[in-house]
Amino acid sequence: MTHRERVAVAGSSGLIGSALSASLRARGTEVIRLVRRAPTSPDERAWDPAKGELDPSVLDRVDAVITLAGAGVGDRRWSPSYKQEILASRVDSTRTFAAAAAAAGVPRMVAGSAIGIYGDRGDEVLTEASAPGTGFLVEVVRAWEEAADPAREAGVAVAHARTGLVAARQGGAMEPILRLARLGLGGPLGSGRQWWPLLSLDDEVAALTWLVDHDVTGPVNLAPPQPVRQRDLARELGRQLHRPALLPAPAPAMRLAIGEFAGEVLASTRVLPHVLLDHGFEWQQPDLPSLVRWLLA
Image 1 (cartoon, rainbow, N blue to C red):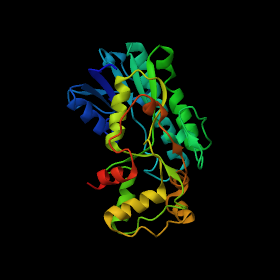
Image 2: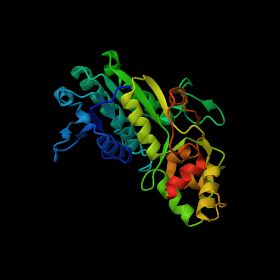
Image 3: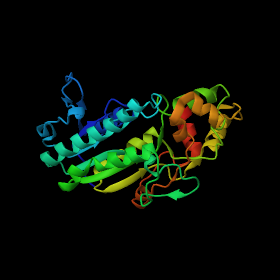
């Protein structure tokens, strides 16, 4: 393990990126934040990933780079233009960062990725060795990971942080679910049998920090050691909130309400984080009851 002293972060203003930047600073790591505007603070540096512009000198003396940039997949309905934005925002930022890291001789890159590469696989147990699935997000994540090739080919140690669903107390995918659960309307989504790789924001940040410090390469599943079914999440939220959790949200109604993205919400991805488990990583909220307790604290 190498304690990285200076880390550059792309996507530092998002839910995960802001929490990660704060955590790195708290342990004494200097954080350089890349921004797509004129810098307004000493720790900011300008870049333009859409144009492929990042001066490699920005990464001088940087021990590791981490990119979490990308348009939110659940922020808007998936029109053809927004699907292109989802793809381009990830590929452009990763390719630009990778090329600059290669030119600057940065030793370590943690490249954002997603569990979405496995697709809807039912009850099949999936690990980092599993083949990709099929579907729009699968193709997005494959292109996203390939965009790190310039760094990999230059000898940079590249890890792909395949993030699952991140639960946060405010914001993120769980916010609307929590809101409904507090009203007693947090029942199963679709059948509720789908497996969700749900981990706390604390564990997501801890896992990303672990990846910054360790030279593990290739895909790494950022997911809980015990995957959960969505209906069990609904029940546990109801139990700890003392609210009913019985009313299901039918799949056709969800598709009508949120469009094509409903297919991802209803998808089943039974992921195990073999790489983290094999290296002794310790989760702070390793099971569903502890995750919900943390979420509601």
